Image 1 (cartoon, rainbow, N blue to C red):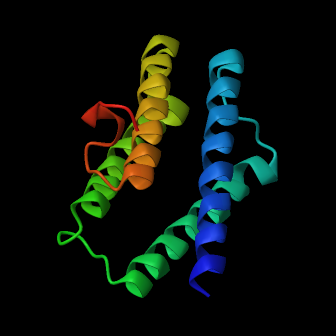
Image 2 (cartoon, rainbow, N blue to C red; image 1 turned 180 degrees about the vertical axis):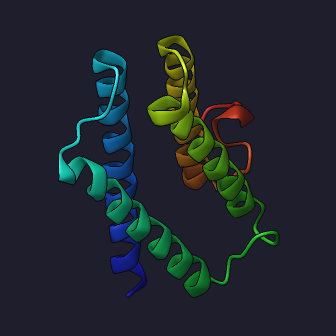
Length: 130
């Protein structure tokens, strides 16, 4: 069961990241998000499954914040990612602000993935050959 949930989680990570990348590029190129229903609804479905699978994995493996510092780091990173993503897709007043927030959100997303892969709260910021 653990491996099935882990695979769902990894699939949702990929879908969520790809979806954000595509929506961010759309916003920067067109100045707004399309009003098409799947574009508005699908990210919420994927991110809900992503969060639910993350909670299930944490419970199944008994790794909880703040006892697992790498999980705590991922949660803090997730909050930063959500904040930057909201600016990039909706709240940024200018294209420049949106672009900077978009690049920042992508960097944070990459860092969160690196934290998960290394189980080090610094992720790729820890340096060294992995």
